[in-house]
Amino acid sequence: MSVSFQLREGELEELDGLVGDELFQWLVSTNRADVADELTYRELTVAVLSDACHFLCESLLASGKGKLAVAYALLRKPFKESLLLLEWLCGSQEEFLLRFSGKSVDTYVLNRLPKEERLEIIRAAARNVDLPGIDEKLLWLVRYSKEYHNSLETLWTKATHLVTSVKASATEPSNLNFVFSRESAIDDQWDHYYSIVPLILRYFVGVAEHVASRFVAWDDKHRSTQLFLRDLAFMRFATRPGGSENLNVDSDSLFTDLATMGFQCTECLDTVNIGGDGVDRLWLRSEVKCRNCGHEYSAWDFMGGAN
Image 1: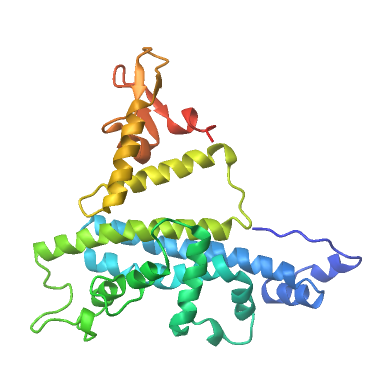
Image 2 (image 1 turned 90 degrees about the vertical axis):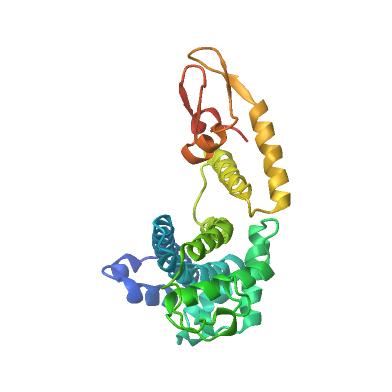
């Protein structure tokens, strides 16, 4: 999180005791606005990511307990605001930092930005992250559309308010949002949660990594394994009944290829394959188990140096 710069003669005494706004003002007054911007960028990235992760973690935990109203309500801030700010840093960090360091917050109030400006922010970020099938149209539809009844915007609005009147999220007569949900309705809400949240989370991670890569150096030895396990987990998600047909085909091909790969067990000399439930063990626990003797191998050991 630290930023280095060269001190001039006599500046060490000037810096003594300066923190916060005073330090930033000193940096600007000594023609080091670039250092101040870099500090701001890093602090923003870590703070926004940390805050978003708290909300996302609690949302996932609430969903695991079947508390769907809570799970949806907790998604609003990280997906609608935190992600948009990170997308802004991902595609146009200089513009955001210029507005952020201005005299008024009015220029970067996220929910007041015109639709076209938000679309351009999302478009630039999606282009940098470059995940197939994920573009600004899909991301807008899922996160911001008030006309689409299955958008997250619709569902977290209903989860937050007992009664809503917007057409796509209008409360039915003699009803309250999420309060009188029957078992079938809860199942539908659960299906929807797990059909869309993993997709946005995967994109979220891509945006976060692109933003953080400006000051975070990845571990090259383990990076390829990390990306492989992430993609493998996402492909397993894609095989669920509601998944994309193309993703299902790609997933089946990948799992078939994995089943044909193997290595010799150091304990019993049998061949260790990654097939069947071994795929889930691999992405979930980062390990492979010998079916013959039960010896376990960490993916970080036998794949850590792969490129």
